Length: 630
Image (cartoon, rainbow, N blue to C red; front, side):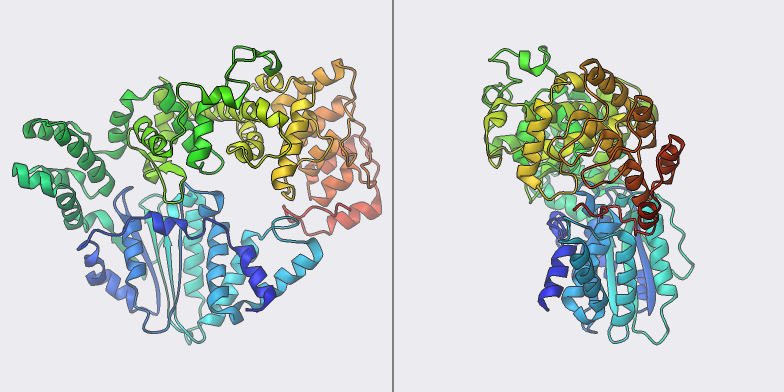
């Protein structure tokens, strides 16, 4: 590969790209072998244009089966084999089509670079025009899909292609349906003279996917009873030999094709056996376990307390999976303190310093014990992955907690409204924990920030949690007290931290940023009015500027927050105010293609700079590529 192609390869890669396959346990010896002999699989494997859906209930072993198929694929025909394992509990790129296309193109470019010369050329153009990837610009889903289609056509002229995609449902209903339509279209429009192209994907029964009659389907729970039998027999081999019990057969029968149910019940049997519980009592316990996964999870969480709830909130709603070291601090910092604002806390308050947090009774420094604590608090439903991040043992566990489990822990009903309320309360709590961590004494005194484990997450994620609450119109005035607004001390500290850790991030705040800039930039509508009133009562102006001379109105206009723009204008914001480079709010709104905001500004009397507006309106509106900041 040329140096430019290698740099392009790096721009497509992301750290977690290959993590998920390693987290899926290898099939127990003797299991999954039926797949290769299955009539449907055999027909797909010899087809020229084949789309195979491995479908099944949550926890029925779809991922293990697809990984087995990938490991056992026939590569003797020189096929280009591509794969991606979608991970609903992972980072954003692990669970979105953008991550899928980046990973697939990375594999194609690495193995068949000639098929993606146009991608390398586009990379070179973007870098020359906008700077380095990840700083001045990002790849976008639609452009990468276009490059994948064109590369596939080039590769298929000389060699077959096999594509394996796991857990389509974990990227969301709309994305799953759209991806299947893309796969169908790809296969349908390939010229007949091209080499064979086969796609295998796994997905739950829902969403309902529209497959043509010529497509292939295999339902896991209809085929995997012998595999579950082998798994249970292996796990309980010693127990069965000692007791001559039929419990393994009972577990297999009641599992109804769901490996995850069998796995959890096997663990309960092992725990009961270690406690020397009589076999008949163990058998009675198995009969009392609900056969439905959701009901089993509900039974398991009955003993959960406040610490468990806090852990579950973090695993469910963190903007990315937390490492075990990050979770240690996320769990020990409290969201609420009886002393407000932070500056009035007594010196020995655990809310003020990391040292005090380390002295708290629930602080655990040892990683081995922390791992055990995660398992205990989650009732066995969470784990530490091979990459040392905390996650649920299965996607169905996360689905359960988001849809009903957290509202149950809150003592509420299991309605959609209750689940939404539980999620909002979680985001509000997490945002406050992040802000309190930023305010810790050791951090405010430090000039370097590398030694604070939870700091990167707290600095880069508190705003995202606030946005999630604001989207549901949740009052968040507590945050103003946390920041001691209109004091700007904590915001200035946050700005220094952010610039010290990820200076080149597009989201990195500018010097001179204050809380009103942040709220306006990210469209936190619910806090705008209160924040403004406190600011004006303190004798300040709504046109307060950061070091680039951007005002709250300019930030709101640039990011398309129409409601915030209206509030700022009503409060007296100057509609034609210019930043340090002579750019007005209208310039920013037009340049980003925010037509509704443009209309609001024009109605408010904004002066039309014809050249600037016409120039901006012809710009490609890349979400991540700003109009040039000189």
